[in-house]
Image (tube, rainbow, N blue to C red):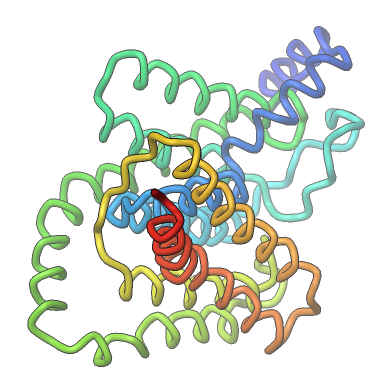
Length: 290
């Protein structure tokens, strides 16, 4: 790992308060909160398919990378390589979860947009997010490369195998069967995450993640694909309020002690952000519009 340590030191030789702040912001492009806000925006705008896809990619990257971290057991760079502004990371190092989430989710956004400028922006943000992990000294360069590879692998499986073949089939099955048959499924998955995640696995508390998964996927099942054109100030205001309340719910859920109450709080946040919030606010928007 000598060359990797040398690369970290080379990047940090250019360190400054500006670069510290710059990379602290960019590292969030591979963070859970950044992508949860993006998912909330998708649901608020009526893009259920995009919201579900980003949710699946985010969840798969999170649990997949953490499982690999514990299986590989590679230690993080030492404190002498960590920038003072970076928080100490206690989980194993390889692969980088931030790099995986950035590569997979930005890759999905680029694949759906397909405009050259959008592909370039997504690639740049994903790359800088990975670079930030090296600059901050919380990952070795090969951790980031492994994270990029894992995220792109998940994206390829979803975009080329799962989404084009299964999405239409699941939709037609849901139309033929009562949704009540499926409502226990996300709740059971959320409970499994809350109770079966091993101690010390890493990341947010399992009751927070489990409740959020249960609420978001339950809400996604109940809502409809109804794309909303966000054009007027009223449309932007409704979307902003919906996402802001969801963000407040995320913060409040994290402040609750791990347990049943945290599971319920994060589940309600997920249901609001994916179903109740967009539906209620756009109905109110329709009534108030002239």
